[in-house]
Each structure stands twice: as structure tokens, then as C-alpha cells.
Image (cartoon, rainbow, N blue to C red):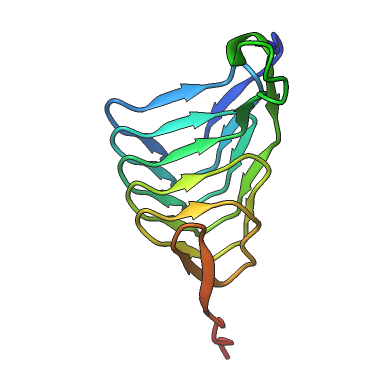
Amino acid sequence: MDVVPWSSFRLGKKSVIESYSCINNACGDVIIGEHTRVGIHNTIIGPVTIGSHVNIAQGVVITALNHNFANPSKPIDTQGVTTRPIIIDDDVWIGANATITPGVSIGAHSVIGAGAVVTHDIPAGSVAYGSPAKVMKTIIPRKIP
């Protein structure tokens, strides 16, 4: 595994990481904004940037790391890893037991359903669920006079 010795971890003001969660920044930064809740028993493997006012339910996996396996003549654990950054914008709710895969961006004010497997970018203002996750609804914010 390629360890990035200068990786950092930042937790914003009034943010919480609940019990039994694992935050791993060995392969890239893990940055968490303000007023964000990382629920019980989550796994976050960097590089990952999570915005402010994000709610991540229990049992969620957010991993920017993937094992290489292209060469069938070599054991997978000897082929190294690849990372692709994950970005979760502000005001996102991720339901229980969802998985966010490497390279994904989730736009602001989106909801990811419980058990979803997010394999591609989710635009802002979306409700997405399923495996693989699909956008099922768009949330259009009202203009405040």
C-alpha cells in the first residue's frame, strides 16, 4: 500500500464521529466540515472530503481505495492499490449501510438511500438509491423572498 506520509485529518467545529467508526488517512486526506455527523460503525478511507451539515447514518462505507487485480498470475494482495478522491458536498444525508465507491462526487442537498451502492456522481439536489444507485427524484430548492 502506498502510504502518503503528509496526509491530514481535519474535523470541523461541532462535528461528531460516533463510536466504532474507522477513519483511515494513510492513502490520502480525510477532511470533514462543520456540523457533520459520522454515525456509528462507519468506515472512511481517504482521500475523502465531506462538507458541512452532512449526516452519515450507521454502517456506511466511504472508500476512495480499491485493490488492483488485473494480473491473474499474481496474488491480489501483491498488486497494490489505486485511490480516486471522493467528494461529498454540504447538506447531504447518506442512509444506513450505503457504500460510496472511489472517484464519486455527491452534490449538495442530496439524499442517498439506505443500502445504496453509489458508483457514479450524483448531481446536487438528488434523491438516489439502489444498487447501483440511480437518481430517482430531484429536489428543487424553493427561492426564499
